[in-house]
Length: 298
Image (cartoon, rainbow, N blue to C red; front, top):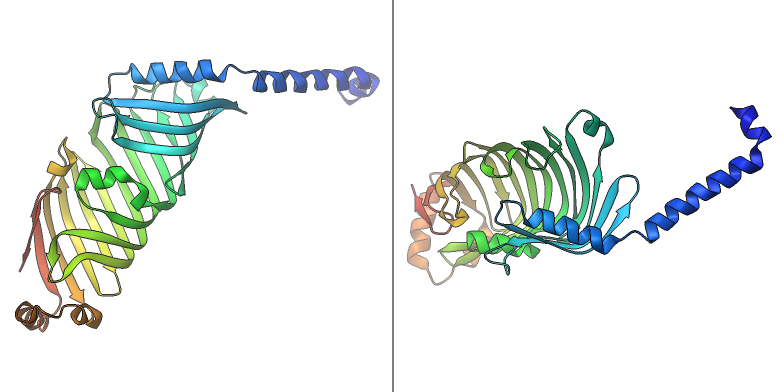
């Protein structure tokens, strides 16, 4: 092979040059708008309640597409954005294709952070059962407006962690998965104030949970903040309307001295609060729904 190349060096170099120029022309002259419209039409014709919008698209070697300003919303409520990405790179894996399967890996810039992972389909069709792994890094969860819409309160902070899931696109709640997440330096609004607190600031929240048979098992929820620390565990039974999902949770709360300094003017309630704390951390249960939770101290 080397002898052949050396004898035909000029011809070989010209051939390589032509290939590079051809690939470059195909890339820059590629009908991106036509492809973008085709992808949108195919996606929006699927029997799902979701609507896909892509502002721009271009090929990205090898076997990839880079999408800019991509949004997923509800067809019947287009103002509600389920997801929005500033940039999304999707690559098809070649080897699974020859085995009659589909695998697509992605890298995404969204909500001030990064998401990356892969989706593997058991068949070469996006309608087939699938499994996925997603890694999240430095996601500013407060910028995700749909979260407040779905649970009725604002949560802020920097989200990191991994999510695993397997299921079918028509029966997402029937799938199985788990998540291991960490939320840093944020704040969560409370539906029912605790004494004078309408929200809780935290330095770190660690969350481990699993999904199976339309039920989330909250294995660990540990909150550490400047005013208190707490734990939570139990189950959340999912409903199609997320805010209607039912709660069966129990937890503990241990306030720090800074908590009591900001609770002046509620002396009677604070006195009872301190009396109960002498027996250790306060315990409580949460029932009701995500939209209307009910808290009871035990």
